[in-house]
Picture 1 (cartoon, rainbow, N blue to C red):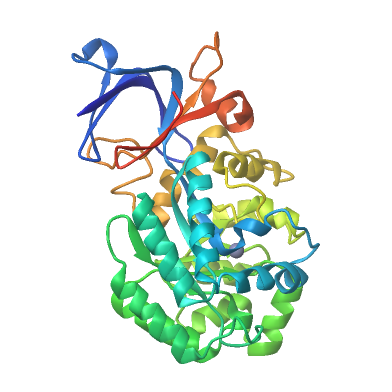
Picture 2: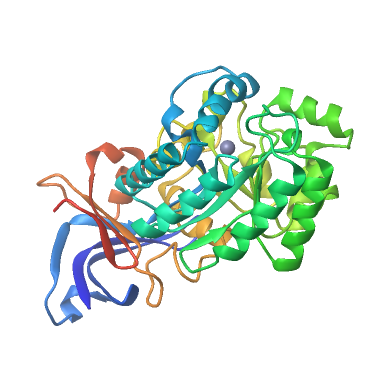
Length: 404
Ligand SMILES: [Zn+2]
C-alpha cells in the first residue's frame, strides 16, 4: 500500500472538476484503494503537498511513426503526407530504427504526463509488433494499430488487401489485455479500397473491435474522396462500408454537413479533435458548437507529427485558442484529455479519473515555492502550464517518472 498526501483535481463532466485539497490518495496492487481528507487519514504518507495531482493524460490520436518529423513543416495535408510523412514511415521498415523510435516515443509521452494513448504505427506488421513489445516491456498502456494502405500510396508502404487484413487480425488476436490492445487502423478513405474497409467493418462489428481513421480534414482530401468513391459525402463512404460504430474514433472531422453529423451521431462514432494539427496544416476550424449540438462524443489528440507537442495540456489550451468565438473553460479542457477520452476508448471503468477501484494512473505537477494551490489552480494549470513542472508519473501504481 502506498499513500500520497497532495491536492487533487478530478474530472467529473465537461462542466465539473472536483477539487480535493490536502487529500491522501492510497493505492495497492495498481488500483486506487481510497481517497481521504488528510485529517481523516492515519498512517505514513509521501509528501506531495506542493503538487497538483490529476489523472494520467490521454492522447486520443497520435502517430508513433511520425514522432521524429514533428515540426517539419509543409503548408497542407496532402503535400505534407507525400513529402514528409511517407519517407519517414518508410524508415520504420528497419527493426533497429523502429525499436529505438518506439522507446524514445514512449519515454517522451511519459515525460509529458500521458499514460494512455491511441496510436498509429507505420504500415508494417513488424513496426506494429515492435510498438507493442516495447510498450509491454516499458509498462506503457495503449491501443495500437498498424496503419493500413492498399491503394494510392507509395509502393514501399502499400500492401495487398490480404496482407493488411491478415496481419491486422493476427495482431488483434495477440494483443488484448488490460494495458495493450489492437485497434484497426485504415489510414483514411483515399488509401483504402472498398474491400479493405468492408472487411474491417464486418470483422470489427462481429468482434466488437475498435477502429480509428481520419475524416474530412482538408478540402483537397474531401474532393479526392468524392472522385474515388462518388458517394454523397466522406462520412457516407465510411458509413456505407461499415466503418462507423460506437467503437470508431475519427480524427479531425472538420468540414461536415449536418447530414454527416447526423450519421456520426446515429452510428455512435466519436471524434479525436486535433486543434494544433488543424491549424498547423491550415485544415480549418473544428465545428465545436455544431458537434456539441449533435451530442457527438469527442476527446483530444496531439496528432504528432502534424501536432507539434506530446503535451496534452498544450492541446487542451489549443482547443480553446483554436475557436474564434467560443470560450472553453479549464474543467472541460481537463475532461477532454482524461475522463472524456477514457469513455471514448471504452476504458472509463479503469482510467480517466481518480476514483476508488480505478487504476492508479496519475500525474503530479509541482507548484513553485510560495505558490498557493487553490480551486483556481486548475485554470492556471490549463492556461499557463509552464508555471508547473511534472515531477512524478505513475502507471498502475508504478513510478514511470520520479524527479522528487
Ligand atoms: Zn492523424
